[in-house]
Amino acid sequence: GNSVTQMEGPVTLSEEAFLTINCTYTATGYPSLFWYVQYPGEGLQLLLKATKADDKGSNKGFEATYRKETTSFHLEKGSVQVSDSAVYFCALSSANQAGTALIFGKGTTLSVSS
Amino acid sequence: DVKVTQSSRYLVKRTGEKVFLECVQDMDHENMFWYRQDPGLGLRLIYFSYDVKMKEKGDIPEGYSVSREKKERFSLILESASTNQTSMYLCASSLEWGTDHYGYTFGSGTRLTVV
Image 1: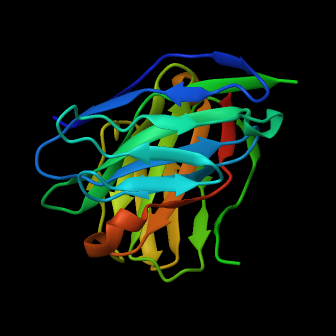
Image 2: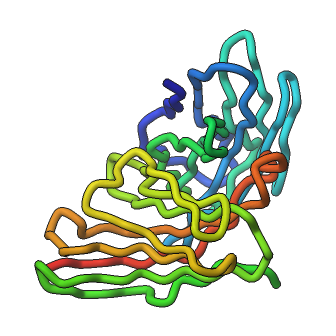
């Protein structure tokens, strides 16, 4: 079945460091791919998305490129801030005969110190 | 500001109680979802609904049921709460699945503790 695998955390970085959070997927067909972020005590917010191969999603300095050949959607940011500390979830859309639901990875905790 | 509202942020219930978790969205979305979030396990889909009075089982429906009598409201029911249902519960909604690539809007979550 469809699945998402994220690198395990926690990831601990100093402010202004470069961030990469790896995400790979297994899916039939051509799913859309997403990154969500969850700040402490809150629900998930959509960070960025890509709907087809080679698309690049970007938002708030974060980027991820949909790589079909490597089935990956790695999240990157050139210079992290303390305010980026959160849990990041990679997800893919999975369609069945009833409808479409998102399948999430287990999440990666990012902690940024000043 | 469009949103998904979950009625309670924190709940404490006793084992064996019937528990209702309520979720309301004001975006006229077709689809609504219930997930539970547990450390080390991420988000797991319990139930979803793509239309009023319709429901589909997700990955972990055992011990849960749902109700969707109106388009904007999707309720999760724990028929007889057990301690292993202590968790964070997240509700989400999305447009009809032809446009699902826009993703979900999530509520803030309900942290349920069963004692």
